[in-house]
Amino acid sequence: MPANEKNMSPALYDSFIADYYDESPIVRQRTQDVTFYRDAAREFGDPVLELGCGTGRITMALAQTGKRVTGLDLSERMLERAARKRAALNKEERERVHLVQADMTQFDLGDKFQLIIIPFRPFQHLLEVRDQVACVERVRKHLRPGGRLILDVFQTDAERMHDPVHMRESPLIEYTTSDGRQVRISERVAAFHRAEQRNDVETIYTIEHPSGKKERLVFAWPLRYFFRYEIEHLLARCGFRVSAEYGDFDRSPVRDNSPEMIFVAEPGW
Ligand SMILES: C[S@@+](CC[C@H](N)C(=O)[O-])C[C@H]1O[C@@H](n2cnc3c(N)ncnc32)[C@H](O)[C@@H]1O
Image (cartoon, rainbow, N blue to C red):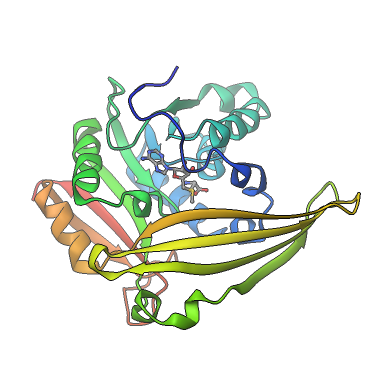
């Protein structure tokens, strides 16, 4: 049952993108973050709440290492895939996983967690400051004493805020799905909105089916970009203290060319 009916549809990921998510090499090649979040759960403990869990890529990995984990997502289609993965786990692992359809800015689960994580940038789908604050406040309400919040966003490359070169469609990757579809993924920025710290992005899937049928599917999505001290201030505003900050999942510091910004925070500013 949806934990909150107010903001249920249509979710951004309730589209073809849910069907292509897990097989995309862009997602499959992300293994370092899985290790990072697994280690974090070992360090900080469970139960874990994952906000924006999608198809359960991280959720299931945590359950397989013995952690109790609740995966929350807005998208029914992403959660359907997560439910299939949960069904494929053994009984013990399966019983450790709960999936909830809810908005990460409005949830109330009636439970508290030792660790709350927001992996692979769902926070960048929260466009407005009021939504970001609402999310972090929900996190604070759901944390046990001594609990931690960990979220990752990418480090913003200033060129990507305005350079028209990014408006040209550029190829990202090509692959063949398990049922023989040939997929080419490309991307472009359709519009820059610097005043709102947002780009309108198009991720374009050009698909050739085994039957010869061709399709061009466009996932159009707004991307909110952040700056390091903006997140630090946001967390402080919501009563959190940043206890560690990394520039990548190998726990290296945030440097000029770091791809990520990963924040580990605890209540108690
Ligand atoms: C890039 S995917 C990340 C999925 C997963 N965490 C992973 O690492 O593979 C972003 C996810 O955030 C979810 N999402 C976006 N806005 C949300 C919101 N307001 N509340 C809950 N989930 C949201 C999307 O439905 C999508 O599944």
